[in-house]
Length: 476
Image (tube, rainbow, N blue to C red; front, side):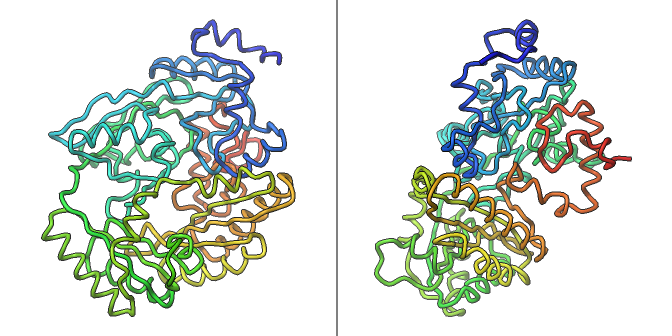
């Protein structure tokens, strides 16, 4: 394959040792874990193939790359570990994929003030292991912990399985270092809290590489909990389980774990168990023994009062032991016609149940199984996570089925007023629906993009942003 005409200039500017145009490397960066991209690869489609891979070692390397790209008008798409399930790190216009894997230093762990500063390319499980060895934890535990980077968490506004108590990444980030599209390096102030105008670090949380490149992150850390208690409850209806969750939250209790599975997913969670309840609720508390124990006792009474029956801690402990296992979905996707998709949304308590029923009914014709659970709960509402599994006759038919699933789910969510994503981000999967989702606030995003990236080099085509928004009449 002939290299792009600008590659030699790039090598001269930043060093040939961090630039690759090898076919294998380009192919590896042309798909992430988005099931649609996987099906396309099985058809030998290479729709998102970059023209060069650059692997910076320092923030200054990133700065030189972006300064050069801004001058040459070459697209740059940041890449963490390629574990996005929505197509967020895929290059839709070729150019450079900026692989952050070499920037994986754990710069400091401040035990006095409880924060850690790391480079954006550090893997989640490696940082967590380092902290655990000293008696600390991030309390951020996405299923992709061993497959994702800190920079990826920040760029996609990720959350973890224990967010019901500890919050999402937006509550854990203390400060960031970012390289702007013109190569300028900026840092937000490291402080517990400040009221000095808008909190500017939030410009980059969830920006998916469209406004700059995150190179360093300072995050809160926490002492490991001294005690943890968990319990599973069976319910006859999904309504009773949801009411129990609301009662627990409204009482001021702080569970670290809340997961309510519908009947279809309960069968998978309790595989091998003879008697499967219609719905399955996991709850867990941690901290000081006396406090966590008291919270657990109070929550237990609330669940029993709504008709729940205890299944003990064993189902929860079994799930904790396999909670990072994604092999069931991966094994389906490996089959030529197999398709699997995960779609997570969020809504208020008053609307989540009818939205759940509408989504289940609308999606059943498109998959053999439609599984659902509620997790990541708040006083105002909850996320809903759907898993779809099926088999088509070919990868092409599977790809088409997946695109139909996305269109049905997103259209219905917009009709119901639900948030069309809770923690997987936008990427390519949700891009067609972002303008309707953001409505008038899309103007703010467009103006930010125009101000920070007038050359339109950063991850073009993402977040619903036009490649040349001024030409399309979207910016005054």
